[in-house]
Image (cartoon, rainbow, N blue to C red; front, side):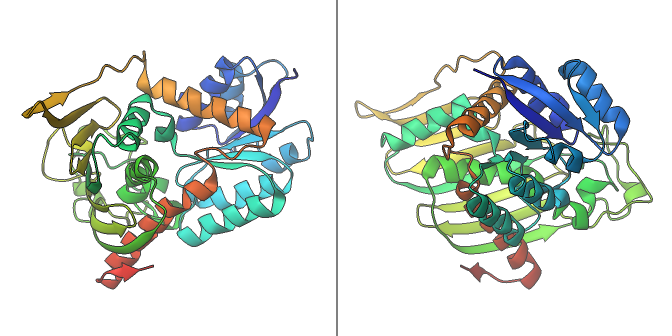
Amino acid sequence: MAKTRVAIIGCGTIANAAHAPSYQKNPDVEIAYCVDIIPERAQALKEKFGTENTKAITDYHEMLKDSTVQAVSVCVPNYLHNPISIDCLRAGKDVLCEKPAAKTYALAKEMADAAHETGRILNIGVVNRFNKAVNMVKDYVDAGKLGEVYHVYCSFRAHRSIPGLGGPFTTKELAGGGVLIDWGVHYLDLINYVLGIKECRTVSGACYSKLATNMREYVYENMWAGPPDYNGTYDVEEYVTGFIRTDKATISLNGSWAENINDPASTFIEFIGDKGGIKLTYGGGFTFFGTKDGKLWQETPEIKVDNMFNDMFYEELKAFVECVNSGEHIRSYVDNNLITAQMMQGLYDSAELGKEVSF
């Protein structure tokens, strides 16, 4: 069988850490193009993960003309997800677009509509759907071990982790938002996947930008996606809190890139049921709490995986290539992610309006 020829648009952090190495590891894939507006980055990705036949280019429109390219990873800043993904779909390419789908729910819906109109695959990079621990939690829920899951609480909080202060991550026009759209998207999508949520009913949220409004006074130890650009923009939230009602359970959340609390154990999700509960450490394992033989009981299942990060990205990219060849709509298909985009939009709208919003 001929190898699936893929292109990677955007040769930055996530392309180097996840997409390119996962494609390189897959014997059924050939990286045909590395595309980046900075030519040195495209060339570096080619040299590290491509072959002598891989092309390093700066304009993705050149790649769109190549009918031998079947699939595209879109790994660019958030504001470019919508136009580039739609261009690729309309050129007859299947697409895996990194999270979030887009800056807003309306733009994400446009992307889904384009996938429907063209008949192409559009998956979103909601990688936790391919995480072994997350799927074990889903198995527990589906098997009824928790009974009725009536509430979920999630925390994605950090002490000082504002990324690239003054750059694309902290510029609303480019990113769409701050910690919610960057980190919260993973937590909300994970919850939606595990519970099979289909309907978002009401949302109440509040967003805060307090610690870096004067960027030069922001104190930190290290900065991913840095260094800071003090001539840049910081107009997004570093803290979000919210409450969501759905057709399955209520959800409460607190998230922060930066806050004046330093607690290393502050990234987790708790599923609360009437028969049992689960606390899942984000990126790690989980503990089930219940009763057994009339006594309180708990277990922490062993999860056999060498590297959780590498494993889930490889499985995500492998599944994408498989559905490119089969045409199947899988768990990361865009329609399955729209509920997450709607929840985030609701949180932002509620924060701006100062009241609960309904759908």
